[in-house]
Amino acid sequence: MEAAGSGRDLAETVNARQGTRIADAWSIMADQPNILLILSDQMVAALTGAYGHPVVETPNLDRLVETGVRYDAAYTAFPLCAPGRACLMTGRHASEIGA
Image 1 (cartoon, rainbow, N blue to C red):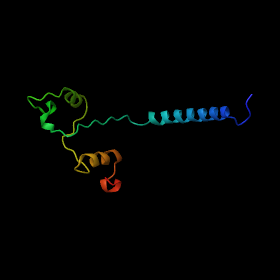
Image 2: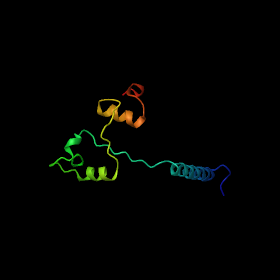
Image 3: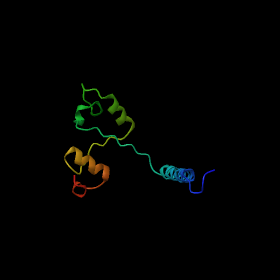
Image 4: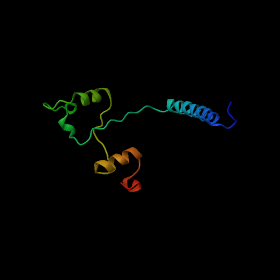
């Protein structure tokens, strides 16, 4: 028999608390929208089938455009790739995050 406050008691307590936290997290996530943002990087949109190019074949991008949303005009918070992505992911300006 183990003494009160033993490692086993502590492990059972931690597991019970984590189970509660996981259940809470799942209930919170169920209330959140499920959004998947797909970006194609460093390409010319006019050179895709989705924009009607007669030679270039881009079947996966074409399918995404047909079943999703195509944005024909976009804005980036920073004209370079990595800082622009950082701004998009954080929702903050490059000067605020040191990008």
